[in-house]
Structure formats: structure tokens, C-alpha cells
Image (cartoon, rainbow, N blue to C red):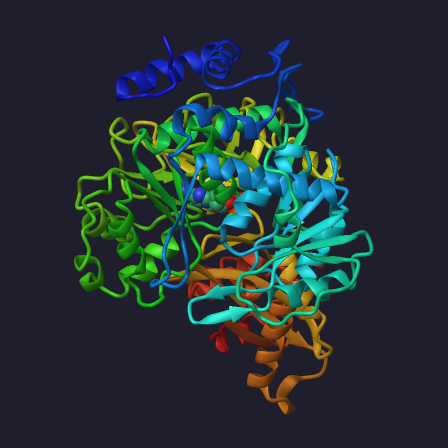
Length: 635
Ligand code: WT7
């Protein structure tokens, strides 16, 4: 019988065992029973982590949008697929049915074709959280174009880097976006980015804020006029299982952002199967994930996972603080939300404003609560459990990554007993391992180590676009025959996992993955700066905030330091985006270095954590004398 919907802890263990003992048989059964294929596979899985090369469902043919849309038309045609809640709390919500979404995607797909987009072309999408964002993603998938969504909070420089890295031919954007009481000139940012992007030959512009923008003749087109001319049906492009579906960039600890490449069949199967089980999704539920589609959470759990399951998925354009900090709860009440999935940083920000705004609203529709993006601290977990879930909605603390495509370690609601701050147990088919620094697997419970995955799963990224060597070096070289996540974790006495945080130079700020190197590069562009180093330090809302140690070319005494700080943060905003701004900037005469010249971040981290008394032996440093000065001037 089908294992598609797990309903008890016992069943979880049974299904888990089956998925580990016979992964191919297990995934074959799931794939066969719950998806629409144009041709079945010849081989469920082939893999070799030393190359690394992983292929799922080889030989199969399909289109993911047939699974998201067409196959629901006869049974769910008039059901709401996307429920759009606009920024303005007084504007009406929009219910887009499966039939309407199908037609909108088809028209959009035909519009893409009319501008010369073909199977395999890359299309960059830079849009706010409006229905066109989901529609354009699906339109690309329908014709086999590879979408690369860039979060619309990234700067022009960050956008052009991502456009050029994957040679996108087209950009889809809007005249602007709403953010609470503010508007943002997205088209202006695109224009600036495209000065450095010779490969882009067309820009489609959705109208959202009706600002008077410049349209460049022969390059820019109003989306609506193309849609008006487009036919409302578009046959699917038949895709091979391993054809690229999308690229999504994530920060690395060094260098350029990494364009993680996800392919078609495995991603579809895993995102759909996890969605169904992690959220215990039932036919009449109204599911809401507050993430932006610009992140993997939005790809897998706003668009693809829910739609493949024929769910109603909410898209929220606004922010949690507008018109006040009760907005989320107002939306839960208004749309009778059943599953609510958000980030710990949002919970902490809302908890700061007390429970008055929560109590005003009827939250009794909620059944399952979720968190993602960073470790959730105990206090936030209890606040969420008591005030939002009223101690009756299980919290699924879901650990995963852009690279994993889908949720990897998580409770199954109503099955797995939860434990605050623990992501608990591996999802079906996932084989985690904790490794020590010498590369040995730690087989006992009550250990901590580096979190790896031993065996392929269907939605893992297949490569870094244009740089397979970097893919191998980053994920498959630290430990033999393992995928290395970059996270540390501990396993408790019953085998539950708790993610302790990054063990590399990536810092998670408000649930956003930030590499230290690109931020340091931005700071070092300032003409007064000689050198810099960034570390994370604990912050009660953001989880981590950024602390920058900056040395100047001449001794900075004559300068206006506050002004310098502003200029540095402006540079970071221009190069990356406001999410990467530093909370604290300390000017120093030097940075602690090893004899080989490497900056000792461990020491800088301790100082920023106010733990300078635990520095240990620093006598082997090249320049131990700078440490005292840094400690004295700590902010
Ligand atoms: C990193 C991945 C996956 C969607 C959003 C983030 C951290 C993610 C958890 C969690 C502790 C978590 C990890 C991971 N992370 N979820 N439940 N508990 N840490 O995707 O931007 O690729 O970041 O986020 O450090 O490696 P991402």
C-alpha cells in the first residue's frame, strides 16, 4: 500500500526503514503512484559521490507544470490554487483557481516564446511577491526554460552578477514593489544592473505600483500587452528527468554566489512528498508559508510542493509589521490558515511586541506550525507554541538548505514527539551522519559533530552552474563519500538532531545565508580601508548580527568614524543589499593573524561574543599585540 501520507510515529519508523533498506524500490513506488509521467524511467538511481554525479529516474519524461496544473483541472479546477494577500490590508485578496492559474501560466509561457525564449534558456526573475512571480516561474518550467529567481531585496550589483553568471537572456521584473508604507523602484535597479549585462536582450515589466518608469525601446516590454496577445493554452515541453529546472544562488564562504542547479523529476517527487507529510496537508487546508519565492523555501514550499499536491497556497506581498505587528495573525484569521510556516527571526520580532496583537485574532484554524532557516532558540519556541499554537499545534522545526531542495530533518506532525530547539529525526529516505574532525563517523548517541548525508536523495542539487569543481570541493571533499552540509549538529540520547549552526564562514542573519568574503570585499572597496574581517555575534531578533573589524590605510583618528561607518554600510547595501549591513563596526590597528597570514576569526568571534577571557593561547600569532587593543575597544 501507499506510503504517501504518514499518520503515526510507528508508521514513520516503518516507512523510514523501508526507504533506507531499499531506497530505489521505495522512491519508485512513491513516484509511480502520485505523479503524471509522459514516459517511465529506465533506472531509479545512479550515483557516485566521488565525481560527484547523481541521477534520479533516468529515462523518464515529464513536465512539472502538468503535475502542478493540468492534472488538477478535472478534479480541482475551481479550487483556489494561489491565494494572494496584497500589501495593502484594505485591498481585496485574490483567489486564483487552478483553472485560472493554468490559463495565466499558458499565456505567460506563450509570451516568453514570443520573445524568443526556448527550452534550456535561462530567464532571470526579479519580482516582488505578486502572482506574476509564481506564474512566471511556472511559465518557464512549462516551456523548459531554466528560471533563476533573484530575491528582489538584492542590489543592482548582486543582480547583475547573478544574471551574468548564468547568461540569462531575459529579465522579468515590475515597475516597482510595495513594502509596508514604502515603494521600491525595482525597474531602476534592473536598469542599473543591465548596464553590465550584455547578454540580456529583453525585459518584461509587470505593472504593480504605476510609477512612471523609463522603458528602453527594443528591450523593455510591458508584460500585460504581451499577455493580451497571447493564446490561453500552451502545450508542455516534454522534459527529461535530469533536465535543469532552475538555478538558485546561495552565498558561499568565499567568492561568487553559488548557482545551485536543481533538476526536474527528483525535485518534483521530493518537494511534493515532503510537503504532504511535513505539513500533514489535507484537501481543504489553506497553507501559508511567509517566505519569499526568491529563496528555496518559496520555490519548494510556496510554489512546487503545494501545487503538485493540489493545495491552496498563500502568497503574501507585505511585511509582518504593516499596518502593525498583528498583520500575520490578522491574515491567519481572515483566510482560516491551517498550516503556518515562518522563520525564527520573524517569531522573535513579533514576540517582542507582546501578545495583545495576537489575542485580538481567532487563530483556531491553525493545525501545524513550522519554522525554517536558522536554529530556533528555546524562548521563541515556547512563545510560538503557547501563544500561536495554544499548545495544540505541533511545531515542525525543519532543517534543510538551498542545496538540498527539500526538508531533510524534521518532525512529522502528530507523529514525532517534538522537543524545543531540535529538528528531531531525518525525513524518509534521508541518511544523516555526524563526523569528527578526523573524518570518522560518530556512531553513538549523545555526540556532536559535522553534519553530513551519506546517501543521495531525489532533490539534491546536481551541480553549481558552470563550476562543477567548486560543487565537488565545497560539498564532497571534506569527508569521503559524503555530502557535507557546512553545519554542526548534535544527536541526543534518543537520536534526535539539534542543528548547532554553521561551521564555516557563512553567517545566518535573520534566516538569510551570508558569506563573509563578499561582504569583506565590499568593505575593502572603500578607499580608506586596508583590511576587514566579519564575524557573527548573537542578536535577540536576528539570531546573528554582523560585527566588522576594519583597519584603515592611515590611522583613522583624524576621520569622522561615524561617517565612515555609514559609508561602509552604504557600500555593502550597494554591492549586496541591506540585509548584509553590519550592526557594529570597530576600527582597529590590525587583525590577529597566523604566521601564514590567515586572519584568526576564532579570536575575533570570541571578542565579539564578549568572551575575551576564553581566548586561550594566542602566543603563536604573528601579531599578538593587536589583540589587547581590539579587546579594549570592543563595541
Ligand atoms: C542553512 C541553509 C532551507 C531554507 C532556508 C535556508 C540553516 C536552515 C534550519 C533549522 C537550524 C537551519 C543551516 C543551513 N538552517 N534551517 N531548522 N535549524 N538551522 O536556506 O539559505 O540555503 O540556508 O540555514 O545553517 O545550512 P539556506
